Image 1 (cartoon, helix red, strand yellow):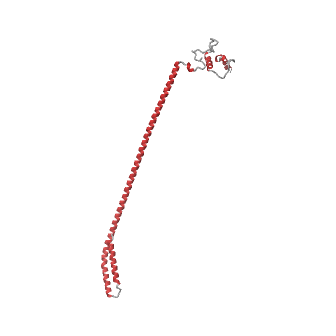
Image 2 (cartoon, one colour):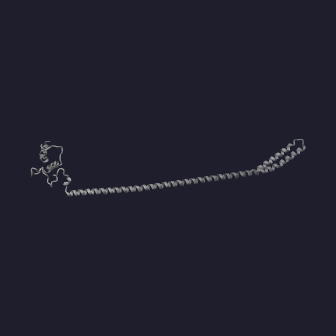
Length: 235
């Protein structure tokens, strides 16, 4: 601590200017840029040689950039070459930024075009797929309708053939029955004639009997003949 204090007291004349810290100077909380610059200058380069009593209060020479008026901007003390270089760098930076912005805008435009083209292609693909699916579904429905129509026609054909076969079988059956009944009728006719003859003879022998018996026999014979004729006429 003592070493730091002694060093501070040793370098005090070079870091601070006494006339700025006298009691006669109006105190304020504001530290000027000129004060800071001169303190730093004195700390690095030492106290300037006293050429005049008013040296500290006079205007700094033009060849010393650190001693500039308090309100003078630092940019005005820079050399023209440095200012030109700085301007050139600024211009290049602005141009580069403009080029980058244009390139970015061009890239975004190309990406937007690519996306739009891809979206149109995707929409066209989806539309074609939908049309293909609709056509395939329509073809499938048409094939099913044709198959159902063919099946219905086949069923109707089979039903018609079955009806025709049933009618043919029925006709053959009736023909067989008729052919079987005709010989029986031919065989029964002489027997009925004989019975009629016997009945007539019996009537001649017994006239007192009821005369209604021959009429009944005749009616029975007519009924049997009618039945045979009806059976023969059935298909």
